[in-house]
Structure formats: C-alpha cells, structure tokens
Length: 137
Image (cartoon, rainbow, N blue to C red; front, side, top):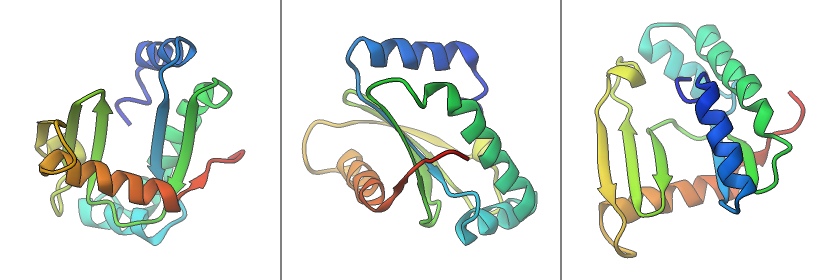
C-alpha cells in the first residue's frame, strides 16, 4: 500500500516509463484465498486485506494507460514482496502474523543467474507468467 499511496512515486514511475523504462506491477488478486489467508494471518481479517488490495489497484489506476507499464494480478501464496530496479533487488519478507511494514527488508544485488537475488527474480518471473492482466476493476 505504501507505494501506491505515494503520488510523487506514482508520477516518477509514469515519467520513467515514458522515458523508456519497463515497469511491471504484480499484485495479489483480492478475490483469491491467498489474500484472504494473508489477512487472517496478519490479524486484520480477510475482508480488510482484500479491501487494501482493491485500494492499491485503484491507486495504481493512474498508471494503467501509460505505455511500458503492465499491471497484473496473481493468486499464488504471498511469500514476500519483491522490488527491483536494475541490479538492485529489495525483498520484503512476509513473516507469519506480522504486517509487511514490520517485516524485514533484504537488499540484494543481482550479479548473475545464480544466488539469492536470482532465486527471488526467478520466482517473480514464474508468478508473472501465470498471472493475469488487470482489467477494469
């Protein structure tokens, strides 16, 4: 949510995409049982987590028509959040019964097709490849 709520960051993402940067945003499907489970595990409830996800989708809406930005939904288990910029990879781990804001963030550098960063990037690609494009929500 914190990224979607930052209007300045959303403008920057749109500007970078217009300058040629490819942007992919992958969110949990708010109607999936995995999002519901995450809400229950964090103690905020399935409906609240689904609502927060729908809110993020709405906030990212300003990016939907920007060329080179793709938004998709997935229904896989929410193990972590992955943020990548060039070779830098940030992994916000999801710890049981802990909100993402209170969970550790690990900074990795992607230097090859092997190692910790590569494992997380490969995971993202696998989920991306089975996700579905975000249609009018």
